[in-house]
Amino acid sequence: MTPPSRRAILEVANVIALVFDRDYRLVERTSAASAKLNISGEHHGQTVDEVEATGALYQGFARDVRSLSEARGSLEREATLESGLGVLVRLGFARDGRDDFDGIIASFIDVSELLERNAVLAAALKEVEDYKHALDRSSIVSITDPSGRITHANDRFVEISGYSRDELVGSDHRLINSGYHEPEFIRELWRSINAGEVWSGEMRNRSKAGEEYWVDTTIVPFVDERGRPQRHLAIRTDITERVRAREGLVRSEQRFRALFENAPVGIAIASLDERIVSANPALARLLGCSLTALTGRALDDFAVGDSPLDDPRVAEERRAVLNGERRSFQAERQLQREDGGVVSARVTTWLNPAGRDGTRCWIKMLQDVTREREAAEQLQAQATLAQLGRMAAVVAHEVKNPLAGIGGALHIIRDRLDEGAFERVIIDEIRDRLDQLNGLVDGLVKFARPVKPEFERVGMRSLLKRAMSSVADERLGDGAIRFEIEAEPCCELRGDPRLLEQMFVHLLRNAGRAMQPGGGVIELAADADEDACVVRVRDGGRGLDEESAARIFDPFFTIKNQGIGLGLAQSRRIARAHGGELDVERTSPAGTTMRVTLPRAPGDRER
Image 1 (cartoon, rainbow, N blue to C red):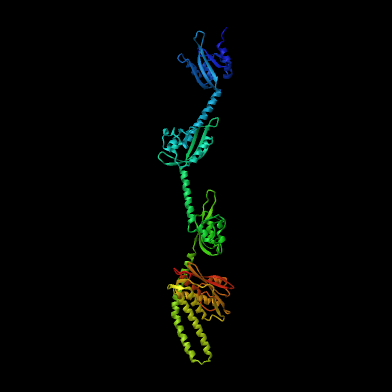
Image 2: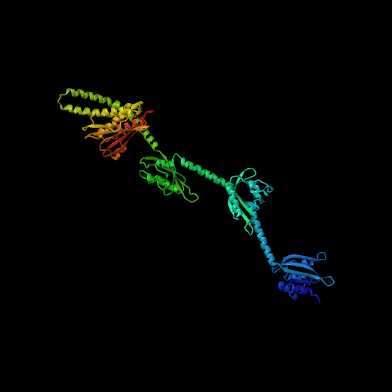
């Protein structure tokens, strides 16, 4: 049987093949070569260079063919044909039956799909390498086996832990455990990753040098087909600075909250429509209400009188701040407490810039200036008294002495007139006017003189009895006056008995005059606690109108036809000089109650 020819074998194998003779001329081709390389019979006889020039092969093909020699009897390489086909090229000698050189066979195996796959694989590997490079540059990466032993540690892990790679690999993460986290925290971590779940959280570790650092950690378990972890990939990010900043912010907020809660002045945080969203205890105490009662309300809800926004200056400053000017503005407010009292407050307001949520708010600081205003009023009063004292000294010298001379002269003239002379009536009227003028001068001099008590122990019961006795001997009008004591005062004071008696005499005298012409009963009530004794003087007169009640203690204010309006002002000065207070407790058309509060003498007890 004749063996198949070389061409027949190549044809059966569907190999793309070309055969060149000793002179490198094309002498044979396979059908696959005709189809894939577009080489036909007309190319037979062309040299290898001419065949390459047709563009059917690849640049350098002729060089590769000519490079074959006895020493280099074959060649294999990958190439891309001019058509774009990827091939594996194999060049070898063709032998005749006597094993002599017969020519060169060039075979081409289509590997386009394989090259494409290799290219995809290479691109994928490049992408993986890029990811790995990026991950190694930005994160702390480690890989552990199922038992937690470290099998890989990247440079960042070595750097932040302070351990060498040799010290890390083969150890577990207990090597960097700071002891900060509770055992339950670690158990929950292992429960998650052993169940094939991804675990994420923040952990505090400790370096070889003993320095603690925080990492944001994600642990990804790689599981087999049965879901059992084969290894764990831990990716960590150093968040030490972020955690420190967060802890610093928490401490700062705690300090601010402590300052806010314990500030001696009232502080309110309000929305732009002035509604309070947060307030501190000092503001609640200032306004006499609970913190809950303040939320949602505006300061205007407590205001006495007009709103400060009615003041053009304040309104203009507020608009300027809302338009971006970084400054504060102030206004004084009269605020009514829940118990009915009124306090004066200096309100400093500034605009807090928009926070992360874009919301702006007002911050208001309220300082109680009630005592400050009272002190200012007292200073003004003292200045007024000083001026009054100088005037009184002039009056006493320039007026009182001439008045005495005029009175004496009138007395002589009157005595020389006949008993029934009409002129005696006129002289008596003039003398009454002189007596009133002399009383006015005495009152001015007395009021201008500073109140300087000479302290000693004083019994309240005997003090009131002396005052009632003095008033009972006076003629206050046509109506008779009686006294009723509801509670017997049994406490002792430390004060000046002369000044205190003068104060109570004036209160009782005013009460008696308020009930004229009909007269009536003046009620006295006294009670005491450990610190003070309180005496109330009630009359049955017509009471005071609102304006009179507000001004009754002003010097020179009077509602009587007689008098100069210094009695109650002087009485209040006496009470305050003893550390007490005198005020109007209640007034109505049915009468007025005056209240005197005086501190008890040290060591005094109810008897």
